[in-house]
Length: 186
Ligand code: IMP
Figure (tube, rainbow, N blue to C red):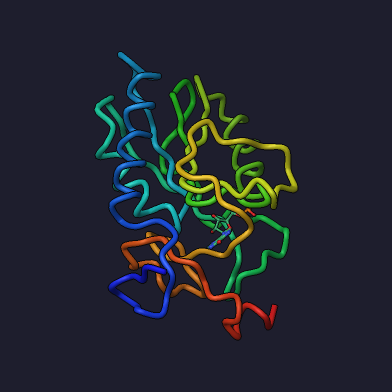
């Protein structure tokens, strides 16, 4: 088991180098798909902030950023099922090429909610880039157009992803130990 330098007790699922290589590939895929176009990258706060920062710098096509925030897991690791908009877009996306940038596609509730909301604003195109995909957890029928890594049903932290707001600053994506007291408490 390799461990992250930030916390020797955590098992690394994807190292910083693996993430950097994959994010660079995703940037090249997006460049190929949007030749001669402009893109708006809409990050979903807070988990996607670090992914968006790296993905945007892997993209050569003209791009701007916007951010939305939705209610998610609160203080623990379980979702309530309800999605609520906490912070709306700053700028209109009408007629624009929009890519929603999300850390994890899990049940799909969040992205299904955002996709429906954004479609009402009539963007020119609307796609989804998710760093991680957990297809076995899906409740809503939704897929990402760009996926970094597909993973089984494991709770992960680091590279922007949190547990109760902690661990976002880990350079690697790590596994949350299944026996963590906060996880078993539900
Ligand atoms: P969904 O609405 O169930 O697809 O959940 C999406 C959100 O849940 C993600 O943006 C994360 O904020 C959070 N999430 C889901 N799985 C994990 C995980 O393994 N670690 C940290 N956050 C997670």
